[in-house]
Length: 111
Image 1 (spheres, one colour):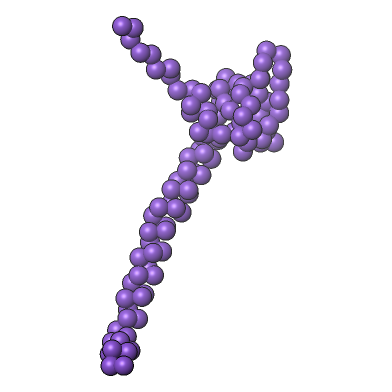
Image 2 (tube, helix red, strand yellow):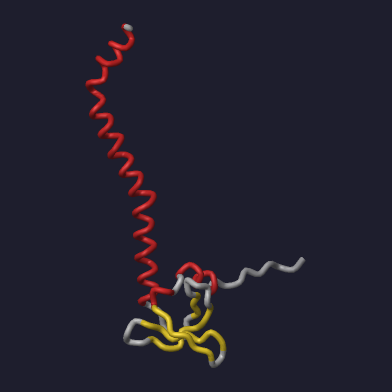
């Protein structure tokens, strides 16, 4: 019974530690989740704004094509195959997949 009383008596200074722990958790959450997502969204927006005619793209639906025309209303005409065109929104372009499509092929030397 004495141990219970001692544990209750030492709980007075724990308020500051809980506050520090809460602030630390919020900081870690911001550093590892919110900040990278915001940075990624900013890069994607910049990528979509800097598209030019002839760029190879992949939509978020997985459709591959080349930018054929940039329209004033925020849409893009892409050529999926010779003579076949689709009109899509700029926001439907996947930056990650486009980076993979435009990446140069890695060749291994023949043995």
